[in-house]
Length: 125
Image 1 (cartoon, rainbow, N blue to C red):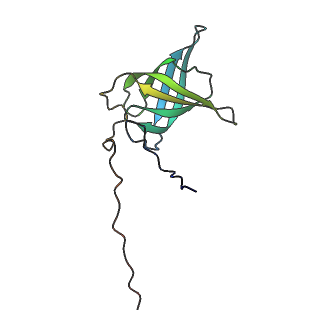
Image 2 (tube, rainbow, N blue to C red):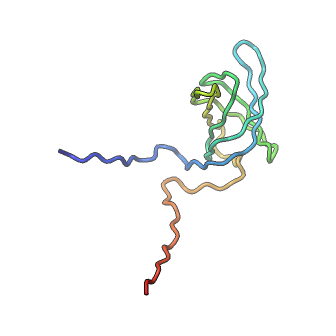
Image 3 (tube, rainbow, N blue to C red):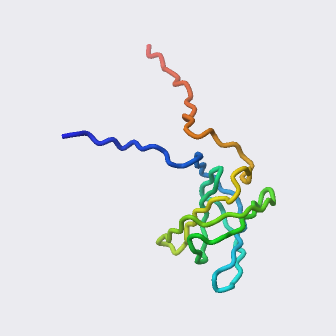
């Protein structure tokens, strides 16, 4: 019998960070309705993020995001949509521009190992 490894190679281009940042999400639905919704990020990366919406949205939809902290706006597209049991929609998005610092934070280089603190040892008497 062989052993299975549950390790996998990270497929994301950059590291995800769980952080809450206020967002305004704007888009125009195929029906012509224009939405402007306040939301918060669940997790972010250098190239996009995940937020919660209560309105319906489609994969591939062009959106505009406004960072409530900086006031900066950026164009993005919806790449994943997942409905939760509570009726909310979790929307994954990616930026259309690669060289932006929309989140105003620095991300580790791809493939970087997490920093580890030195373990303190206790001396037993």
